[in-house]
Amino acid sequence: MRRATWALLRKELVELRRSRRFVLLVALQLVVAVGSLLVAARAWRDHRDVSSAFTQLNAQRLAALTSWSDLSETGVMVHPAHPSGRFLVDLRPWPGFLVTSTALPLPVGWEAQASAPAPAQVVLFFFPLLAVLLTFDSIALERSRRTLGLLVSWVGSRQRVFLIKLGARAMVVGVCSAAAIVGAGGVTAAFAPEFVRDPTFWPTLLALAVAGTVLGVVFASIGAAASAATPEPATALLACVGMWVFLLVALPQALAGLSRILVPYPERALLDASAASLHAESRRTFEEKSLEPMRQWLREGPPGQARFEATMNELRRQTYEELHRRLGELFAAYLRRRALAAAAEGWASRWLPGGLLAGAMESVAACGPGSLHRYLERVAAYAVQLARTVESKRGAVEYTMPFDQDPNRSRRPDPADLPTFPQPLPEPAGFSLLAALCGLAAWSAVAVAVGVAVMARVPVR
Image (cartoon, rainbow, N blue to C red; front, side, top):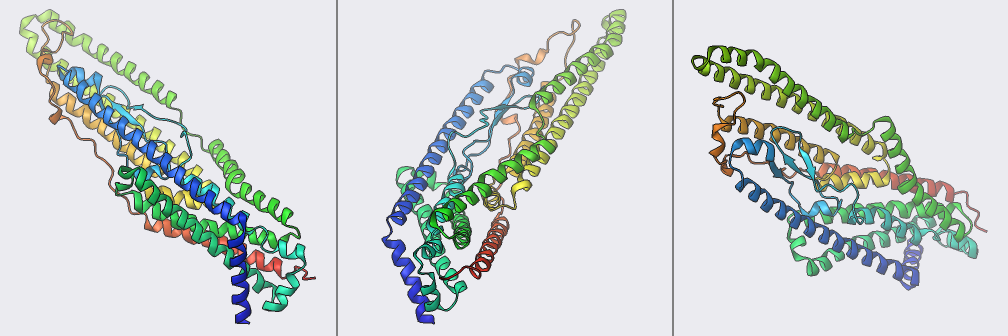
């Protein structure tokens, strides 16, 4: 019996190796993997150049300032780091921000849609399709040729035939998937060495190879189960492609749309309108509270100058502090609603095979909704820190006439006095990847169990 098992296994491997379909699909797999990595390298290079241009522009803008009062309106441009591992998962760069002390952070350089799919998205959609194309006829072809009974009598049982055929094809799918991703990384190293030298590239690529291999095995199991349930290869092909579309396209999109309806994303336009309303209210409050001190100063004349200046500067400080506090609360509420909507959209499809792989890779590359939310929180905290720095450095106003200009305008800001924008630290993601692999293994086990149950009822005539 063991000899028959190994003979059938060798037969499957030899047939796959001699198949033109197998050679074509493997070559196509490698070409697509290499192309997606080269596209990611170009996107990473473009974003690096844009970040360098932002840094130079920010330095020029700060060098042209003549006072801290001007800095409160001009602001500072900040941008996130751009590790290459992040571009293996999502080609959309995170936005930079123009941070001022008088308004909400303004995003700069944000693109809602990527121009091309990232390598992780290629693995998510293309590799499972190749897996089902290699396994859709594993049982159905034997049934159409009426040779299934011979294999059963040779091996001993229907279930054993199913498991041997599935094992052979799943092994081929896994090896080819891993080899295509790692080989594509080697080719990319020759054409984009700077992209590959980033310390986040190889850990992310190897995690993608492992997750893509397991995902391919999952869909190989699904393809074999569909093949056992259908009597003809053409019918099995339609069933496999239908399952691929349902699990990776139709169902995730439907669940994501439902989550957006139930927990919608907040509108940035409403946030800006609320901020403008707070500014108008703060300006009106300052003008109303300054009327009485100004009247008293005009009545007293020069003897009341010092008291008037102290009163107005304290009023200005209190007004700005209250405005910054309310702007911070407004932006924090916006971030909380955005994080809630992103979490709802993620959890809606996180249990599906594609959602498991996407979630694991987002965690490994630190580019998921949670990482983006933490980056936006750092931007909000930096805006508050910048406002406090500007307010403390600009000094008191010496009023010689009502609402005269600040005499400290000749004091040029020193970039060394500006707060430093904190860049995120690497986040451990081994547990997320392990959990995703366990989830994918559960999907594969369910598909195998279904295939075995269906195979037990397949006629062998």
